[in-house]
Length: 66
Image 1 (spheres, rainbow, N blue to C red):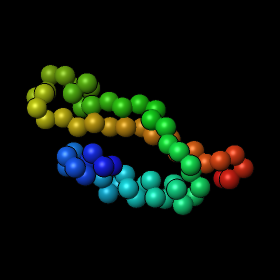
Image 2 (image 1 turned 180 degrees about the horizontal axis):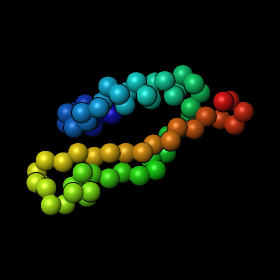
Image 3 (image 1 turned 120 degrees about the vertical axis):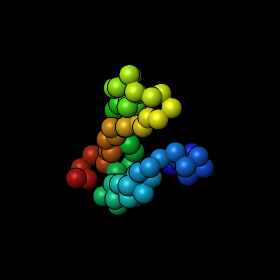
Image 4 (image 1 turned 60 degrees about the horizontal axis):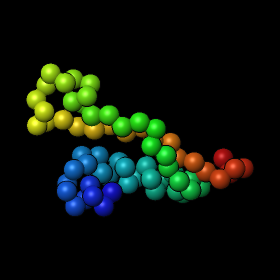
């Protein structure tokens, strides 16, 4: 999030912050990146100067806290 704020590089920074806060409130203690891909990887024929990234993250709560 710090880099996203600094570089203005996350168009969904608010959604990321809200999701992280919600998961933390539910007891999540950490998140793990499952996959990261960019639109350029999916559509390599499109302009390289304009692409976005997508991430799949799972948040984990301590055992017994669900």
